[in-house]
Amino acid sequence: METLMSFLVGILFMIGTYLILAKGLLRIILGTSIISHAVHLLILTMGGLKTGGPPLLGLKNTSYTDALPQALILTAIVINFAVTALFLVLSYRAYKLVGTDDMGQMRGNADE
Amino acid sequence: MNNIVILPIIIPLIMGMILVIFRKSIQFQRWMSLIAIAAVGSTSIYLMTQIKEHGMQTLQLGGWQAPFGVSMVADMFAVLLLATTSFVALCCLIYAFGSIGRERESYYFYPMFLFLLTGINGSFLTGDIFNLFVCFEVMLISSYVLLSLGGTKIQLRESIKYVLVNIISSFLFLLAVAYLYAMTGTLNLAHLSVRIAEVGQDGLMTTVAILFLIVFSLKAALFLFFWLPGSYSAPPTAVAAVFAALLTKVGMYAIFRMFTLVFYHEPQVTHLIIGILGGLTMVLGAFGAIAYWDIKKILAYNVIVGVGLIMSGLAAFTSTAITGSIYYLIHDIIIKALIFLLGGTMIHHLTGTSNLKDMSGLIRTHPYVGWMFFIAALSLAGIPPLSGFIGKVLITKGTFEASYFWLGGIGLLTSLLVLYSVMKIFMNGFWGETLLSEDMEKGTTKGLMFPMGCLLAATVALGFGAEGIHEYVSMAAEGLLRPELYIEAVLGRNPMP
Image 1 (spheres, rainbow over the protein chains, first blue to last red):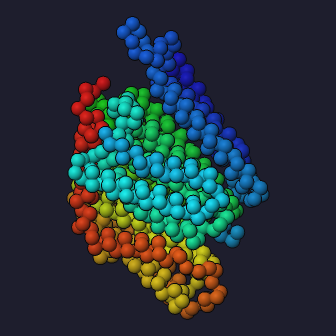
Image 2 (cartoon, rainbow over the protein chains, first blue to last red):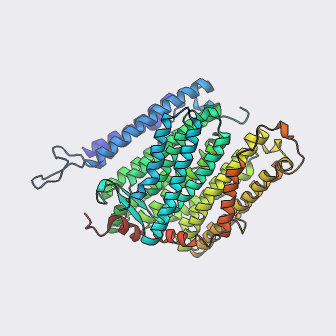
Image 3 (tube, rainbow over the protein chains, first blue to last red):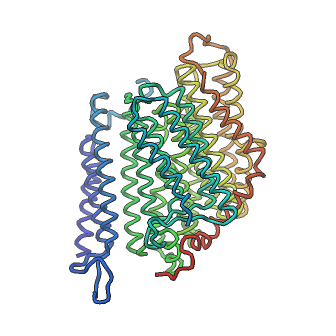
């Protein structure tokens, strides 16, 4: 299961990197979003994937699930949500003002 | 356990949240943010005396014992940076009163400034790697807002690049945390240090260490500085000064913490890489600084040179070099704020242009600004009685002790180039024929001289009084070189799970 998840994470990273290297601003934002999902999945996988174990240690339990990665992901998702929202607003304003969403034309020079 | 450790984080946080409500009352916002930052400053000085007497202060949040909960750790290194940060933030805030403009003030400038400080102080004080990530994000999100606040064309364009670079580096940070957690099963820095010392730092662990180095290098502008010159020349002067003084320093603090406390077992790999990156940073930064005729660009590249020098102290990893790095870090926070404020004053309040070829002879109408710039330039290059000197001497000595002669040599050569680059601003901007009469100027320097004077006094005082803070600095260096002190302060003598 862990191996399968690792492949999934790799594929998501691949797609995300491809999108970030694109020129359109919206594609770049989608790319960051996809990479964030990949990272969250990776944290979950790194905690170990088990089914059926309670998230507490007990005398009778033979296995237990590590609850910490889930807490970490929750925090990371909230942060990523805020950053993506800000990024979207920022790029909309930039599109309105600069008049383009092409990163090639956003390079800028001293005469502007 | 010491509850005071949390105050530098929650004072600006709570004050920022209160100030969001009082959007229209600008005077109230000004005074309250002034009081909040002063309170953080005095807390950090109080903590400094406590640490001097009783050793490192810790706080286990929620009463959960160390490896299970989140710990806050105030060691001398963190608190020295905290005190300097508060002082510089105070000066930049006072500068902002006279220069930032009503428009930005009524759109949450002060709350964002306080949130930025929350993130910075949190990064200094935290003893947990995931908490460090969260504090970084708090700092970064406020810096995105401060960078784009005002919404001019160049600001929006540069903030998009800055946001994208930082989002990617945050992902890499999370990635590194995930790998580290899989290999060690803990996130507490002290506990990480113990576990890695037990199992040894093998090749896989060193790879994770280098992943962390990449992440923090992006934030600290160590070699990966391609984003810095653009984004630091976009925002208004007070914001640019805070960014130049503080943001890269947080990244450097994180590198120091990780590579003295956690990944210190393979210095011939990790610290050599830091040294090579530091040398390249200094050379490339110095080339950038002498190449441009734009004041903002020259100053931004000077930030990069400073990063390289401080990191070469860590690369040498001797007691002298680390002491020198701490001295230089404190000096660098103060002097970068001062030189950015002076440069910004020249651009936005006097000439209206950042091109050196379009200005000259400012010293006739503004002798104080001119001579302040001269002293700041000397201090930046490390000329003896001023504050840059002692740090530079100790770092150079340390690199020679560790027989990194090339690194010390690069440090000395680049400081000559730095001197040339800032003297170019002085000669072209202040000397020569006076082109501008007073009524052609873009604004006044009224109310701006006081904060710059405070920073100038600090750099002179730090130069002459280097002996006075030596006790604190050497204690900070000892804390960095002996990880067992940190571990004992956090974990105590608890049985290790």
